[in-house]
Length: 138
Image (cartoon, helix red, strand yellow):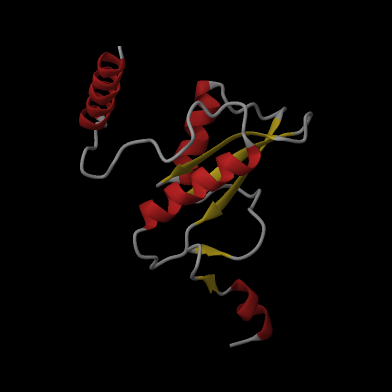
């Protein structure tokens, strides 16, 4: 193992390669990402995706990412990591707590769960529990 390869070695604690997030074109791999606001010097949004390239294009199309205002930074999850979705969700929650991005509507880790591709059952269950708690507290 060469000297430089030692520093690129997989960080087994986090499941991500060591080093700063990249600002290059995102790959079609899983990872977390964030929008750095050039004006405010703060992070406007952070998220996770199983395809960083696709997600980046979706944000451009949706108008959330503005190329003249934001820099897209990303970090790919290491190959062969056990439970990559769990690692990604944990990373997203940690980054939202740390940077409090203005565009994030929740505390992270949301999104579709693997057993429910549509997200319907989870969303329905959350609404049901919230309504039950509200009615119980009245």
